[in-house]
Amino acid sequence: MATDAAVREFLDGVTHVTRRRDADTLLALMERATGESAHMWSSSIVGFGEYHYKYASGREGDAPAAAFSPRKAASTVYLADGIGAHEQALAGLGPHTTGVGCLYLKDLDDVDLSVLEAIVRDSYRAVTAGTYLQRARDGGTDL
Image 1: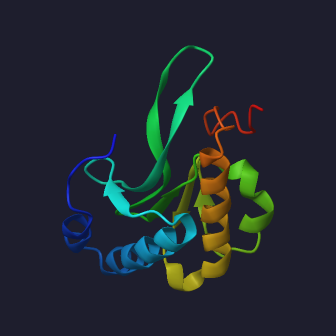
Image 2: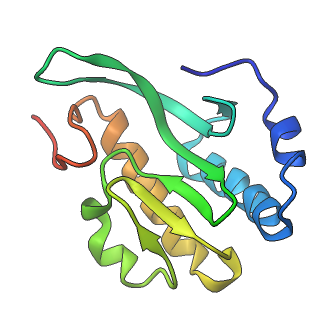
């Protein structure tokens, strides 16, 4: 759930020089890709827009439709529709590692920002279209 915490205050508190620089880049990139303003979604996640999910188990909630966090080891970009949905685009991104729904970037100077913006835009569109109901690890859409 989005909080009232100040995004700028959080980002200004990032001490790692590269993460702080990259956080400013990600803030602008995600605002362009989503058309949404940034909001804090926890003490360390900057989110843009939101979507509602409901699993077959009955569990449901709201989550940011696009998000990032300047973590110590790398900047984390959260892709709610899962990494697998972006396999082809990721091949042209540059150095990165992945988790189920996370893209880890150590230095945005080393990646193609236009590819990253397209990935964020596509992921955002997928989860806000009203057809995406699964967890990132499950992938796909329910129509």
